[in-house]
Length: 119
Image (cartoon, rainbow, N blue to C red; front, top):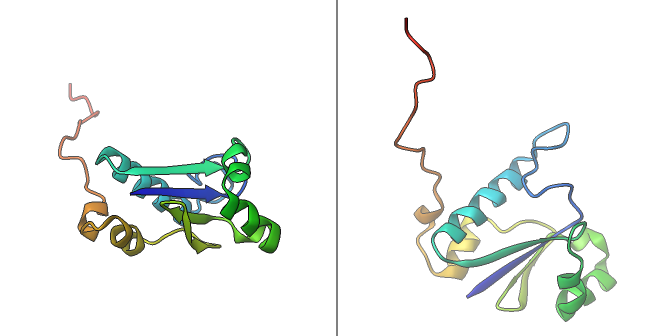
């Protein structure tokens, strides 16, 4: 199962570099990282940094021709476009990958470091 997310032109993939943090971008960046760390084949493309996948994928190419840049972000699962104009939710990602949605839950690190030095 391969999930490809075609972002619009972004300066970065996390959504934290602009004047305001985009919580949806931060969430999808975290979800994709979580899935990749668990061995799932999930990739994001950024139109501003790598246009080749947009040109080579006939479905995305046609989507952009028909609906313009507003159709992005778009998500393809095994080459088939399943979602346009917004990022997939955790529920959708879990359904497509046939995993439990709890696998996408953010878990705080169990190890913490106290940086306060006592004298």
